[in-house]
Length: 162
Image (tube, rainbow, N blue to C red; front, side, top):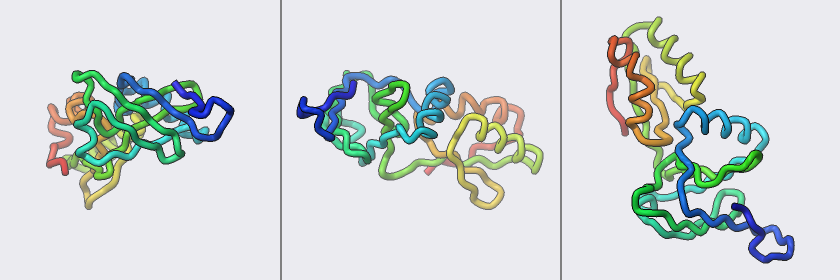
């Protein structure tokens, strides 16, 4: 919930966060965030890897919103955690250090299909030679579950994550 912290229409906004809505790797949330991003409504809360283990913290987004975070123990923060979501505005956690899932496609056809698949899911990717690196913006297991078909039939092989 957004509120103006001064109560007088001041520019400084404050978000009180008591739960994680989900992760940007979730297909439904990804689609919502994609639309909001086009309208410039995404705020990023950049955290160090040490901060994601904390349950209570105060931090500021890249657009100046103060976040007062108090999470239950069963809701760990992580890269891609969606902390606030409205029709035109969202706060998403980004780790200062990005982790990547590296995949090696079997051949050119598998590479093309894997790239198309990643694009449809709006995954951020980069390339290292013939390998595709997928930015982990949620639990690694979520990505591996979505890629299961590629991994099970050998069209792609998980190389590593860094």
